[in-house]
Structure formats: structure tokens, C-alpha cells
Amino acid sequence: MSIIQQIFILIFPILYALTIHEFSHGYAAYKLGDDTAKRAGRLTLNPLKHLDPIGTIMLFIAKIGWARPVPINPYNFRNFKRDTALVSLAGPLANFISAIAFSILFNFLNSTVMPGSHNIFMIILFYTIFINIALGFFNLIPIPPLDGSKIFGAFLPDRLYFKYQQFERKGMILFIAIILISNFAGLNIIGSVILPPIRFFVRMLTGVMI
Image: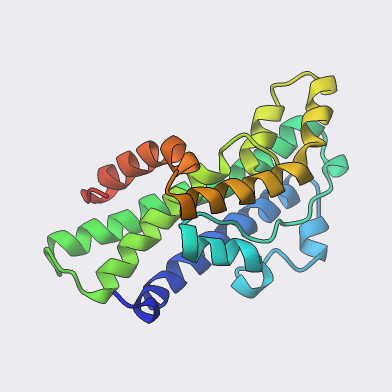
């Protein structure tokens, strides 16, 4: 498959997964009392408002990436740690729900209209399921600034929680380095952690082994 074909197939799955992920963060924050994302124009399903150049490129290269984080002000929440964790959980949860929804369509078409079909629509549909699952599990890794760090942080004492969050900027640099090294050296450090559950749920939802 050529690069152009890959881009054509992946463009919708990637744009959709990143957009619904970040929109859900902003929507959850808004419902919990923080309108920062709304005032920043991020409560929208327009993918251009959510794309992070590096994160999007990483999705095409390494099949793992991220969007531009939705701005939130946790001091607007009633419960700082709990609501921050709920907002963080909203992104991966939206990806998992999306994967389930698209899998219903995939399985319906695969069993009725297009049984065993490998046409372009079914391939795009499959990758929409796969990327949503992959993005969801990737973001659950408990290393700052990923969503999993804030979910995990909700269970830490306050003193440890704030020290943990101070690692956020260094954590992103470290994470990008790990992804690049993994991809180009064939070490697959992150993949060894998240690929087993990704493969399990992709197979469970689609019947396709990856």
C-alpha cells in the first residue's frame, strides 16, 4: 500500500478519534463547572481546532499520537482531583464508546451487505475502530501529561499528587523520545504494554486479528 493510500485510509479515523477525544474533555469540564474550553472555542467537532501537529504526525508514523490539549482550569471544579480525573477519563471513554458504535456498523455490513468485503469503506471503518481503541489505551498510560496520569493522581495524597503533576513537561519530552526510539529501533517499548489489550478488544469488536 502506497503512502498516499495509507493517508487516504487513515485521515478520517485519525481526525475523528482525536476530535471526539478532545471535545469530550472540554464537554466534561463544562458540565463540571469549567467553561475555559468553551471560551477558547474548543467545544466543537471541527478537527482543525483540536489538531496538534506533532501528535498527528506521530499517529501516521507510529500509530500512536495525541491532539492539542483542551484548556481547563481545575480551580473551577468543586472537587479539584476528582473532577480533573473525570475530565481526563472522558477522552478515552469517548474513544471506546466510538469504537463500539463503529463496530456495530462494521459487523452489520460485514454480515449482510458486504460479507467478507475488503473495499475501501470497510477498511476505513476498521481503522476507525482500531485507532479509537489504540488512542484510548495510549492515553490511559499513567505518565504525565497523558490522561492516565490525572486519573491515577486522583488516588494519591495531595502532597504526592502535586509533585506528580510537576513532572508533566518533562514527561512529554520523555514520552516523545520513547516513541521515536521504539519506532525506529524496533524496540516497541510502549507497544509491549498497550498492544495486548488493543489486540484483544479489536478482535472482540471486529473478529479481526492484528
